[in-house]
Image (cartoon, rainbow, N blue to C red):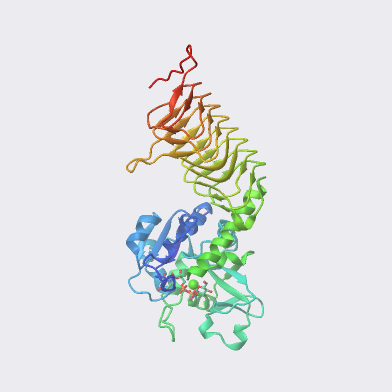
Length: 424
Ligand code: UD1
Ligand code: CA
């Protein structure tokens, strides 16, 4: 790939979100909208990125990790690109321009756009989509021979242009030189008094420059987030994309409607996800497991192979070894379980003492009776047994192979004579 840089347009406040948070910093599955765009650029091999910020630029700076320029007044998409001009002076490679509020844009589309642009040697390559209802978008106007001659914005579209179903997605690949040369000729729009980036298309075409295009297959890619409703729609699309990928990798999902899986989850083959299951950030699950129904795994969870995580089980920052059974009504937080541990119904790790999150370690083959409370920090040794209803106080570790019972739990020793002796 030749020298390529990107400008991400993200100066808009997003008034319709009705929020103090800048629009592009709203999250989808725990990740800001704009980070999806940046990640797609990076996976397409574009790493030199300038973000055009406006409202909330300080918050944006913390998140994006790219160069930032500030557009002081929102004078249109053309003006936004102009604010990045200084940082690109002397650059004569290609520049991708993309909106920071379109989280569903696919890295494959960006790759395809760059490839087409480089192959054709055009001044500008546009990304277009065919829409049943093109209202609201800039329409792609072509000559009788099919060449792109301009983009007409919705507010200016004549009746015969309104019916054009091919629209401007808002992702462009320009030759840097032609971009800034044409941009300097753009005049403010007659109605909105803004500088439209899309006016460069007619300027380039009139100058005899070649303009190419690619068409997106999935029109969902162009969903821009302007409202909480758009946010929910984009989340739903992304959710289904993730579920499809997970199923393609050999995992059964019984009920797509009630299952949520975060994008970074890794799930082994032949595992079955039962309904109403939530798999949050940083979760890895092995092969041949059953997860759910009504299970919640979140914030760094590791599950080995052949594990059963049953109904109303919550796992947080927890590591579960192969062959464990955690079948009913349980909370495990900051816990590490060895292999083949059985956790009885209603077991709770008390991991938070009001100040610190403390760890519970449970060794291989341990058997935890129903309704137990394990107060961390605590080690429950391998091959040990915890009787039903135990409350094990913090630091009162259970030695390997021993049995504890009662509240607070005490070690049950083998009978010596007639007396049942206990230690501790
Ligand atoms: C724009 C395109 C339209 C296209 C549509 C696709 C223009 C003139 N029109 O229209 O052809 O079909 O996107 O969604 O570009 N921005 C700034 N500063 C500004 C104005 C905008 O950074 O002063 C950013 C916005 O945050 C957004 C992008 O530029 O990311 C596009 O601006 P927007 O106002 O959403 O343009 P549309 O009217 O949607
Ligand atoms: Ca828009």
